[in-house]
Amino acid sequence: MPQNPLSKGAEVSKLEAILNSAVAAIITIDTRGIIDSVNPATERIFGYAARELIGQNVRILMPEPFHSEHDAYVSSYLSTGKRKIIGIGREVIGRRKDGATFPIDLAVSEFIADGERYFTGIITNLSDRKRVEEALLDSERKLAQAQRLEAVGQLTGGIAHDFNNLLTVITGNLELIEMRMQGDDLRKMLRDAQEAADLGAKLTSRLLAFARRSHLEPEILDINNLALNVTSMLRRTLGEHISLSTVLAPDLWPVKTDPTQAESALVNLAINARDAMPKGGKLLVETRNAQMKEIRSGNNVELPRGDYVRISVSDTGIGMPAEVKDRAFEPFFTTKTRGHGTGLGLSMVYGFAKQSGGHVTIHSEVGHGATINIYLPRVDGTAAPGAAGIESDTGAGQSRIVLAVEDDDAVRSLTVTRLRTLGYEVHEAPDGASAIRLLENGLKIDLLFSDLVMPGGLSGYDVAKRAREIDPAVRVLLTSGYAEDLLRTDDLGEFKLLRKPYRLTDLRQALDAAFGDNA
Image 1 (tube, one colour):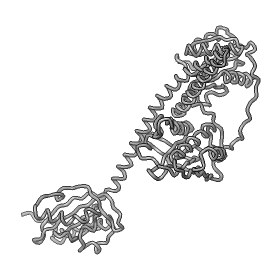
Image 2: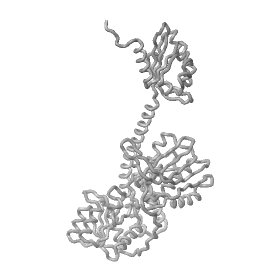
Image 3: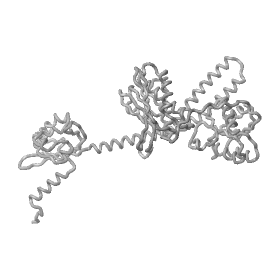
Image 4: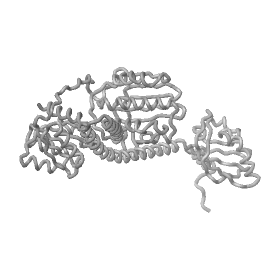
């Protein structure tokens, strides 16, 4: 017979070494549930010393209802032989010495020693695995949310762009009709129509903000000053039932962002907070410097690591359940009753923060209010005081020649009519290539007025550059219903932009500014 190379004593020592080095907790109990032995991992996992466990009923390691029911499990198995957990691993809950509970995987087997029946439990702590699984699920949820918002943003931006062209035609022709009309009754109807068109323009402006296609005019700002101005106005409008306070960090870093959009974002957050506190409550606006770690959603970097200014708006309102929080930034999603909100406030805030190179987060629990944080990147520099408004003469075109470039036939027809109404001599082109051919064939103009985004591969920016190459003295005014990557401020350079839809007064002022800037 082959001989076992290990003596009996050596075998025992080897088994002890295996038990002592095991990562899982290994516990043996008798048929009464009394602990007979434990390994060192049991002490680490449950926080008890071995001497505190041996001789105790194993239910000491179980929370309710398992604590009270354990002995019945063992008794039932011994009397019926029906296995409910013996030989079958399953996930249950364990309890540490300090009372904390945690998920465990429990596998139970039985053996006979010296004529006595015993049970062995092998216990694996699932806390780390659970944390990883929860983090993965959270990451997948955030990625899905980011992808959903991106897809909705692309759709929204395209719709808003086309809608702005329609509004330009509507508002422009209403103005031209009003200029030729007699009779107060008809004039009132026209003005009512114009107000409705203006509301439509505000709606598309918010949609473009969400889609991150707004044309921002960033300045270096002191957010504390902006917050003070906004909260001073809000104190007069939120109502006496809302207690508004501020906590503004000294030596706050400057940021570079659009002041109008930043102000609108704060107002939107404050209004949302007020609506979440119908019986009154506390509203806090706080600023602070924040050194942030990278925030990711899957493979997408939501916020790069770096220095940011954090603007927090907190309320003591009703809070948000998880399903509402996940959809809070979607356009037109609202929990308010019909007629009490468009669902675009938080969408605008989200788009503004993203387009400014920052991020927005929501922390909220039902019944415990909400905190919304806007992160804006720190910049080097000093916030400049607000510039005074530019006064300019708004006289007629004075025989100046303008080339109007617009691919939308209705918008181009309206634009030509408006320019001629202002006294300009007008030539027109339906696309960038046609405009460049006119200039290369010798057309002399004083100003190029072009839509920015056009089909055919040539943008208004491309036409403007070629026009300047042909005649460096040509003034340039661009217009657009939205601003894509092409429309970054750095790309525009010295060229001015007029946002659609615009009034005749807006056009006159933009033309005056274009000529004045280059005079």
